[in-house]
Image 1 (spheres, rainbow, N blue to C red):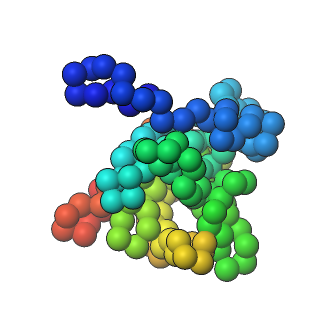
Image 2 (cartoon, rainbow, N blue to C red):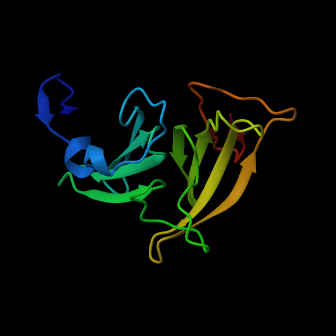
Image 3 (cartoon, rainbow, N blue to C red):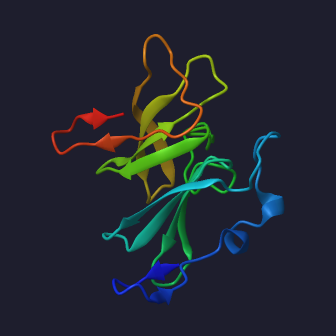
Length: 160
């Protein structure tokens, strides 16, 4: 739901069950909830809300005005794919930030020995392609099993 500054309800944005039926989503066997929506951001340029869905490994953009899905980054419904056809860009994603090139994401990757990371994807919306253009993993590896934040600073540096 979106609320006006006065605190009154101004409209429903969308419902995960309508756009992504439960039976069509794939998520880990030990998942204790369906989407595990853990972040929301608004992009004024596109007029979209971006929702981070941890368990399906996706970030979904929904039009503020129509409620329609504009794009899905990652997961089984991804509108973006790598050159080899993959759409697994992150695993158990948390916070993210849109960038001029695409998006930078905190990627928990909690079950991998390489540990958590920050990853930036270049997104070509015209062709529906994505490419990893930057990533950082701590050395030695560290796993953040919950939470996580990434922010591109005005200087161009990235806060993880």
